Image 1 (cartoon, rainbow, N blue to C red):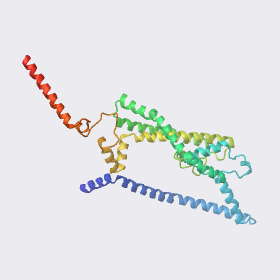
Image 2: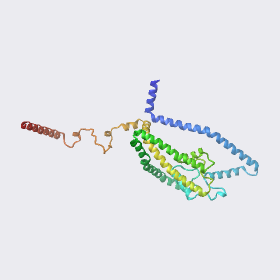
Image 3: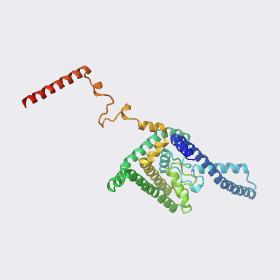
Image 4: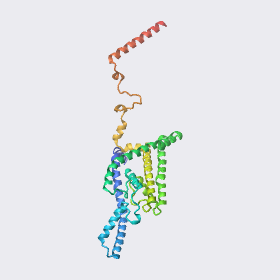
Length: 337
């Protein structure tokens, strides 16, 4: 049993990346199976309820043609999914500047929105070229903001834990990452979810937390849109606040990711999962690399005589002359004494 475990451990170490890839594929398949098993009964139940309402309506209104009713419902659902007001009392909820700004932010941050999508051909064409330039620039700016926050949120606390409190650097970095994770979870997920419950009393805490998670993970808003039934002014304010929440949250999450990557234990795991090629690259001597660090003392892999511009025979003659002078000086000192 012991030789088998030793061989298995050696195989995992030498093929860590392959094992990680297989584990990821198993995770994807498991997620598909779970979602299919959990969501299908709910979908079938909703479909049965809608079918019952549909049949009852046609029985109570025999003069209505089923095909025309299907066409009307289909058009209304399409407009509703695109967040286009179709009822007379909702005519004021048209696309304003704040809604357009919200669409730009959720698009450039790759979050997207089911309700905010271009309707015209011109807007779709402009969106293609606009996002081609805007998405890389947005990701670059988010990374720059994260680098600016890194000394404040990461380096300074680790320095306090390491120097002032006397903790080893590895333990200080790990403790800081754990504390920062609790802070991020509280300020970016728990607290906003509680605020969402206050804004939408019909939502549960899980619905609000799910909304916050989908927003900051740039997955999307999902089926529930916050403030869908609000008046236009309040909804524009909510979209502006959601935009600020998304941008600030992404910067903090990128900073948190960089903080976790500085933990020595995490770096060790990454080196293990990167495969033997990365380990061999790290194990190379600086003398074997073309690019060396100029700040350190130069390390020569060859003897001085081979890299000197003075020929070898001249060095030998100079060495003999110096030895003869030293011997003559020693003889004079002996005769004087």
